[in-house]
Length: 166
Image 1 (cartoon, one colour):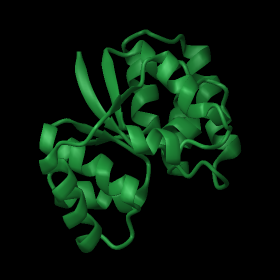
Image 2 (cartoon, rainbow, N blue to C red):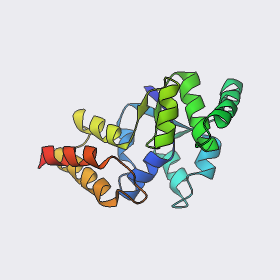
Image 3 (cartoon, helix red, strand yellow):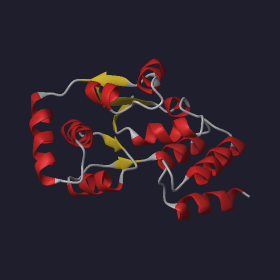
Image 4 (spheres, helix red, strand yellow):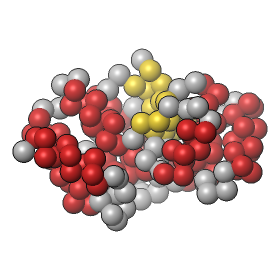
């Protein structure tokens, strides 16, 4: 099993399209700092609890991760505390960071941390045959429908995938 440090926005994307469970079909252990689960995953009110029941693993920061997150807060002013914590976990544990947040993705790139987002998860689910073509297409279309509101994904990437399948 591969570990992935998780930010919150990807989970919100999957919640909005009614497919919160599908990322857990992949052979990953998604980690999220315990405080982020309880402080950031607030809408809908049971989102954090549902994710934990699906397999999200709440984790505590090591001392090294704590101090690195503090450094990130000083260096990357656009990031939230939870963003800095997710990045510190990914950096210290040498694992992928799961996020769609633009500022966090830029910070991860500067720190040499690999990033995956909502579209990347969907692509893997499809390529590894965890979801069928029609399910993949439906997810893409729902993401496109809600894009620009609470979901913020590259429209050209969504459109290209949809065009290839239709």
